[in-house]
Image 1 (cartoon, one colour):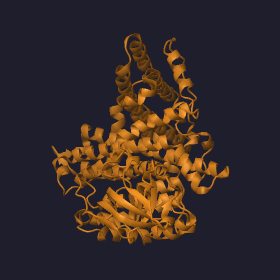
Image 2 (image 1 turned 90 degrees about the vertical axis):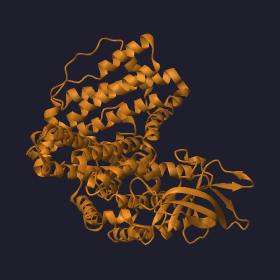
Image 3 (image 1 turned 60 degrees about the horizontal axis):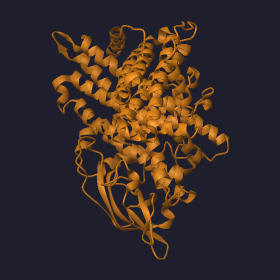
Image 4 (image 1 turned 120 degrees about the horizontal axis):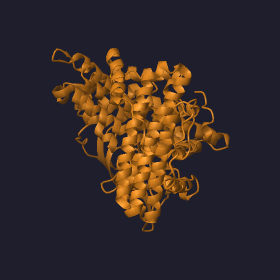
Length: 603
């Protein structure tokens, strides 16, 4: 993939204080023919091997069926996309691996098994394994000969992962660690050959503060598990509780260094978040395809229901949310790719550069995870509504999609945790001097006491009005975040409701800006007339974002401001959340009409 001009100048989180040029982002339309062929291979595999067997997968009483599908995926190379070539993989760049995740997104339970294996099951070894560990395990994982699972969560440690109680004690001869503990919600547990297990090393009666990570083969002994969990959705995903009872692990199977397990978990979660953010969009596109087809087929009052305005509104809004979320994912993915390239050019090793590149854009990873998972939930909910009573039947596709989507707001850290992280990471970077938030925030607080700028926008600048709107939305977020920091200082972490309001503002800003930049870049490539519908989607979303940001802003301000401060901040919020009205109804209808004509999602 060709490098994007000047992308290396962009740092994680800076979108909130800097304006991004359209030339600086990557858009899905720029994927190469080779990348598109890889994506089609993924979709073909699902169409031939997975979709015809979805009921069988969900009803499976044992893990053999899923394991056999993983074998077939391995034969096609779908399990080794991010594994370096020297270890039997394809060594794809980050955005290409994102495209693979999206293209496998309609596989329901299979997609969960595949992503757990290739992501949290394999990447810790790619990024943290020594050469011996990589040579021993990665070729088997890339080919599918071995399957992997990730063992972090425990009954009393979920979001607070570092509080895990599983222990590892070194034997007297110094050759093994003996693991004892319980893990739960282990995806692929029933058929995995290799487990990445997190435990705290205990020595001389003292237990380490931080987790360590171990590579545990299923033949080591001392490993037992419960029957598969009965779940609301993703019923075909093999999910188990696991028990380690005096499981002896060779000392050479300590991954990375002692006490580094929590850092491994956090960094791998960053990757998992953005990969999930794009994978759910594959599922959302599939569900929208189904909804469009049904809207064309189903007749009431003598006409197809797709001709009704209420249905067109739903279809147009579903497409809009998918389009803008997809844009944000690949924008962030390219940011990561370019950061990795810059770090390698600076002399950093490939594995370290990949970790640092993802870490640099951890804020954007959290944003895309939250937004994408909530877009999928919206799409399947509205899709089921379009199906009406039939949507509630297991004979129709929306029933499974509706159930399976729900887990994504919990996977890779709940959306609440991720919202808190977005603001926490921004503020920590500001305190370390890595990003200047307080300077712009103070400038905004002065601006709201001055006379508003009624200057006209430069008509020669594409989307000049809309970019001014985005600048003002950023000011609104900075105003509230800055005031909250001054009000609560170190106690701000206890004001979770305010932090989540601010996070919602930040998420909407990033996604709305991404969509506008994508359309601006497309206009430069194809001309404005050719992308009129894409412009409709960017404009519809921007208007919706203004309303959401105004609502979240009011909620935050009224949670801590009083008297004159309250009045001034509400005045500032009103000033910063203005946008010239357009006919959103007609825009959504135009978007829906083209999909109904093509009988699918076409963007």
